[in-house]
View 1: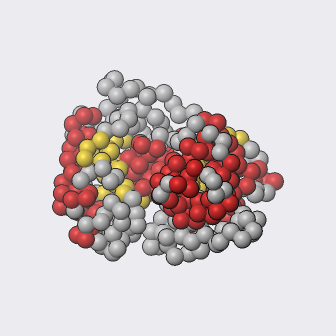
View 2: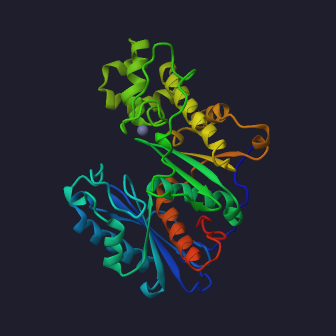
View 3: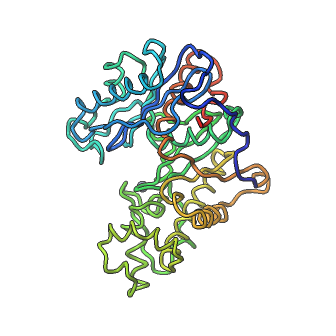
Length: 373
Ligand SMILES: [Zn+2]
């Protein structure tokens, strides 16, 4: 089993340096609760923005204001990179879910899309109508998975497959096959958090079956997410460590503090993270028998921690992923990089891929995800 980048990304000019005239480009917009982050990917596969280029998203003010804010983010990134609007062939957009494969927000809304005007709102169609440009939609976890895949594999991305698990409030996922995200008929492929996993040997004697916000019991997110800590793991483990300092905190606050305790080697916290690592490992074991990917990516807050703790956690996930001998020689484990940029960059890669697919060529950028450094 190997770790690390299979094909090093080629060097490229930094922002503002001379670059070959690329002719056309795509834009990526990552729509978050507070900001839109935007990037430009040119036709040679180079990102023209080094880091974050953020503008207020104003999603809490409802769709009309938010669509104008996305259009402003588009104009801003074109101005910063000196790309003319007429040379933009497509815009990639990602948002948090739940939303359909084509970017229709859930009829029940969500955290960012709580204004009732968002319910069943076609955010992709609205941005397309506002800008007059084709807009390609991805959910945020899929965009991050696509970026991780292309950055990791570089020129051979179109010949590789991967599965990503991104631990946050929930457990996001993404399945990439031959360089392309699998989205499914209803847009729900890669919802890895809601895959049931075996609980035998994971739960302690007498530990209740964890419940997920989606209504399932014993799925991956019911354990491997911040919600899983707050709703399931921490209440149980506090009953086993009644004198623990976290017992005096509100459970939502305490759940967020568990990682810090884990970094300091706290026993209760390590028991929780061991159960999370086992859940993700069992999820990856399902993936191993389902799409048999080249690489398993782990991302989210759980890996944005001290290097020691992150390495310990990834090592535990790997230990709990049961691969067959044939797979062990091929499979790699890696982290989802540059979390803040992953959404915008992944969205841009999805937009580029959609153009290549519609042109009948392989849906893969050659070095689409090379970091602009
Ligand atoms: Zn679930």
